Length: 477
Image (cartoon, rainbow, N blue to C red):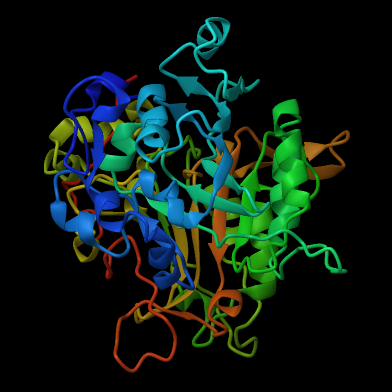
């Protein structure tokens, strides 16, 4: 996989470094909200979903829906004692500088990662990072990665905050690319006299515990204990994880997503084929020689699941599927040109074997959020109404469109039982109206008379299909 190295970061207006050393970083977004980020999160209810700032567009720095990394460490969010980060790529100098500038230098950090620009073992031996417990996660499969991006913040009163995002822990990810960040409420300790187990109607606590335990890492044991003691009943989203393995139970990947959608997804009008599915990601895996091999037979089938629609209406049509992925023209017209294509890791060799995928592809456009020229590292999946005003559900995740991330069907136990084979760790949060707003659908068309809060999508509607001359941005490995 091609990765931009840390020395490619050019410095930015939103997070700018004038000289070497952590004290040389500044953050224009946090400068405006310092000491009041707790109020910013409250104003973001009930969705609590944000996008990272874009260095080249100062207008994004003042948006209520923009969030920078230092804001996650703001003193107003609580008396921080330690934090956990499970991520793919870490740029250590930038990462630690965020703690320095926010007054948290030396606070305990647990870090699980796959790639880092520094040798943490050597730094440990030199006693340079005594406050960091770290573990490099090595996947047994070459196509699998520890790709989830999740952080937890523990506070002096025993409470926890969970952040699920698409960002790596590196400067470019937080200043150049379109990213999505979900920030939980501050979950308190379970009261001593409570008989509750601290779970929510969305089973958030159970699912995140299952995910943490799947790593089988000693460094996570204290975090598992913390989670077990906390009341997550405020959680209004579902936690959707993937972990490597051959799974018979439907608790991971697209099959777990399916199990939730078939219980709670609502399609209040028309027939299922009226409600298209939209996928938007920053990389694409090898999906087979035709759309029937995996995309339609497994993935779209799972995302098509729904509980409420009129069963008396006969629907013989396939569920429409659209895939938002930047074209070559999108990248060349971005803020930094081809350099911004570094976050889009679709292999040209893979693309040449699945040219059929182009018929589903749509342009990257995000004028509504001022991010059309900021290439998307965000990954989202959703299902919208035919009139583009309502949404049945929305998923923000680290998972790109690939079998490795979501799983593929295999036979288990001497071919008698089918399972789901997943190669990567991923993490996402699923928004369902029933649990977030108490309505049947989300409103995605802003009107003054809307009865429910407006959900702002990270891309523009209606979508624009590729024309005959458009080609997806891809890289040659």
